[in-house]
Length: 429
Ligand SMILES: *Cc1c(COP(=O)(O)O)cnc(C)c1O
Image (cartoon, rainbow, N blue to C red; front, side, top):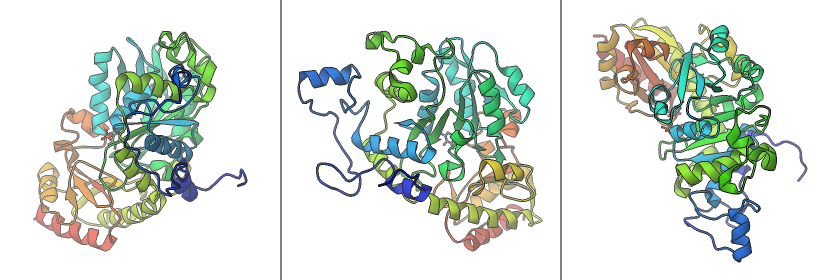
């Protein structure tokens, strides 16, 4: 085959996967094996010294998981990827090689609720901290960076508030400060947004959502652009300085653009153990094969439902960047030109009480704490996913008490509208 760049629809099916070399199996097999036989003692030693790439033990690498890693790198346009057990695991795996006690990240206030809790509370146990800023205020972002900052973190399309981040502007600030930009691309997926093309160093995913696409597994992934110079300063010793556990090997010097990925597997998965299992990798590989088809329909349906809601007198506001009325609509053209995704919120007249009645009255929508399913989903974030947050944090995250979040599926849009119509009638009666 020639080396011309393949299109997205081709990569989502063929990226990272080849017919099984042993059997010719066309679909990537589920390699349900914990360990792999060494050819001989020298082969085993070379693998353990990272002098040869191969399979040792499935906490580190597994052939099914490896195919998924390579597919994720292909569809995000990265140099390498590491998969792990959930989206939250991916966030820790992304930070792990960069951070140390006393170090901090600068992070957007507009985030998935669980990420706010993880970054404001849990990472403190590691001696890490996060400074939350409004990423539309670029001076505030610059002002929040200090000598101990090791990354800037944001979501491309922020869950759940219909917000799109100006990735190019943040990448420029990160670049000037000699820091990597980490982008959670879960809500957008690589079909709608390719953060590396906007200057991101690392992209993280909850594969639990659109990538698998049908609510069957949890999984996460970190994709590295391969473009960051980890040796340009002394800020990233895990990647640039000698690693005692590997006889003083320097990851960046030895592996170049694959340094982050090798470190994540050889140290991160080895010692943190947040491994993705091969069954979950298989489901996710299957899901990704139809990602672009599903995302087109998710976006098309979301526009129809959001336009209908916007014109309904029982609805106060709709925050969907795919609507022409959205303040973030113009950003869609540069950051995610194929669409603003399937997630948005709307405010019901009648506030908190009406929202609770609405989620109790839907019939086709499922009231669940998930998103990115083929099925349409609804949740009242303030009383569920964002419950742990203060009202101020809820508002900043786009999950105010009077707001309901929809994850629009790929059913018939007319049926979704009919369901919301009858539920709104009950909620506002
Ligand atoms: C769901 C989600 C996560 C967390 O992923 P899990 O797979 O549930 O751990 C992180 N970020 C975003 C944007 C999400 O939607």
